[in-house]
Length: 88
Image 1 (cartoon, rainbow, N blue to C red):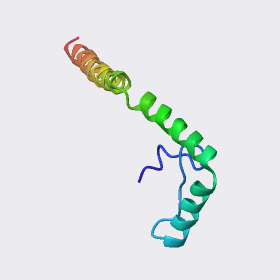
Image 2: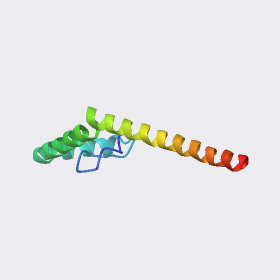
Image 3: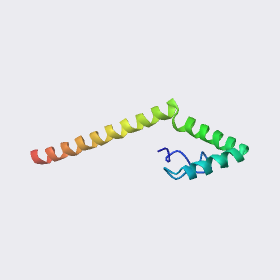
């Protein structure tokens, strides 16, 4: 599900899975509170735009690559020290 992005009552509503009654109650809550519904919608839009923008996703990808490269470089440096110790 989308629980990693939905904060109940802030960016949406979380209801019990496979419960028609819980879904109906959530929908009734949204229908009864147009201002709250609009506020949650705006918050959700802002959250998605910030977390999943092209820039944000590209930054996350670059950080992951940088960490992977640093890890490989560290392993190679460790291996070089071990080999150097054997030679000496």
